[in-house]
Amino acid sequence: NVECRFCDTEDVLKGSITATNGTSSILGCICPKGKFMDHETATCETVPEGVSKDIEGMNVTSQSLKAGYWRTSATSRKVYQCLSPDHCIGGDDIDKQCKEGHQGPKCGVCSDGFASTGSGETLKCNKCEGGNATQTIITYLSIFATMVVLVVMVMCCCKKRNNEEEVALTSDDGLDEGRTNRSMSSSTRAEGTLSRVENVMEGIQEAQPFIKIITSYFQIIGGLSWGLSITFPPAFRSFVSFMSSIVNLDFLNLMPLGCITTSDFHRRLVVITLVPLFIGFLMILAYTAFKAAGKKQRANEIFGWFLFLSFLILPNVSMKCFQQFGCTTFDGDYGSYLTVDLSIDCDSPTHKFYDKYSLFFIGVFPIGIPFMYYLLLKRMRQYLDPGQANLETIYGPEEGLRRAVEARKRLEAEHEDIGSLTFLYSSYEPKYYYYEIVETIRKLVLTGGLIFLGTGSRNQIGLSIVICLGALRCFSSFKPFINDFVDVFSEASQWQTFFVMLLALLLKANSDAGEGAGAQGLYDTLLVAVQFLSPVVVIYFFTRKGTRRVQRAMTRGGRGDEGGRTDPVPRRQPQ
Image 1 (cartoon, rainbow, N blue to C red):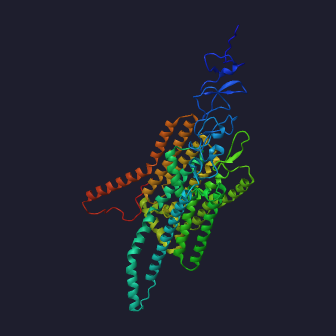
Image 2 (tube, one colour):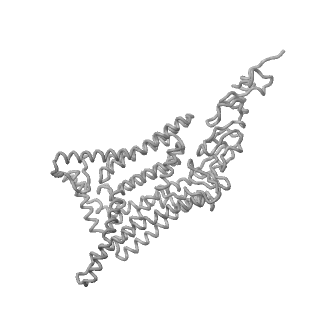
Image 3 (cartoon, rainbow, N blue to C red):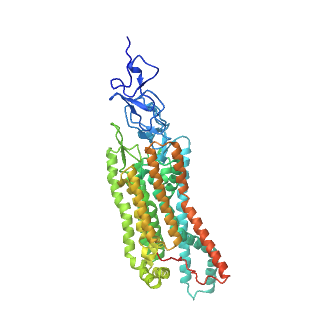
């Protein structure tokens, strides 16, 4: 007699089925699709996220991974999502999980003969063959050199303009006629050039707050992928990676330096911390030398460029210092590796040394620079805010603001030292002269500071959204810019940041729930669409402003704007 037993029993393999219509051996009892055999418990367990759900008969060692996922070993029960879906090809062969050119944890390390560009989800391993790598490096170095040359040209043009003004002011009435004619001829030839330079400089000055707002936005958004441990969809990821590399001056990240020299996160950290420090030191020396020589205006311009440099490099350098402490610990005995560069062992003596190195530069940059801003502005506060609150009480908000701005301009002319700080305060109302410090802290919290809110959880993203809304509420209460349009533009960019974080939270929730590529495509579209919020606000504001001007002109019948203002300070209504 033949006794038939169920496969799906605790003494055989709980949850199993047979591969065919019956089997003559217990070995024919297999787990159905979406399950794998756990030898320790003799049960069929649900496969983790990242394992194919279309294959029958899988056990721990034969689990077939989807593309974009990785395991530490054939016996590992934990499946990790790769930095980018393009890095991991999946399958059931543990030795062939990675795409060509990739290896190591999460396939996030470039193989021999390949060099990396980008980092994290934007990492690419480029093959070092022919002159492609060298050509790419030369291209980006040329772009960077061009930017430096343009900055130097602008500074030289400013110097030339200042020299012409000094000559005009110090001309002696007793000069002979020939010398006077030569001076007039020289001035005439330079007049056109100087006029064009002045127009460019005025344009740069007017655009400064908009440039700062756009730069700050991409500095924050560019760090969210690492700060929140989330992989954004491809189109949005590529766009933000490119823009953040430009605004952060992070050209090293775009070049395959590994083709010509050893390159890893530690070496890039040294470059990105010491080079700005060295350049800043040279600028301070130049500022001191010009000031000692009595050329205060020139000294103030150099110090202004120094402050601009600190503004550009602060978020990126700070985030790099914080990234030094972000390690991923893998299951089993695989070890712990630096999240931003998985080729670095976090337990190595070299990494421990760079922990101390980063702590030192955290004191220099994310702590030192805002503190420097505070000391500089505090020293001049009596000149930067000539009593705007009192003037508004006497004359009303609009007239009080206008008088305060004019008073500050007079104080700038009387006290030349104030001119060195214009980058920090010139866009803000006098009573909010300190607001650049608030913006700096906001950027630091929403970039490197996110690491202190936990890593990779929905709670972390939720807390980030709360911080973002708090900063937005603070800004809406103050509206600190002199120009109302700049206030509108800045608020729009902060709403953009909020919507990106909100979509990141939804993306994280759907990723945890195992949503497919369709959801990724939807979020990619929404994230890209959000980037048009600020441009739409700009177009709407200018259209509305232009329409009102036309209506006023038609109403007044060409009599002029008798009640209007001709000064650059816009109207501000009582809040």
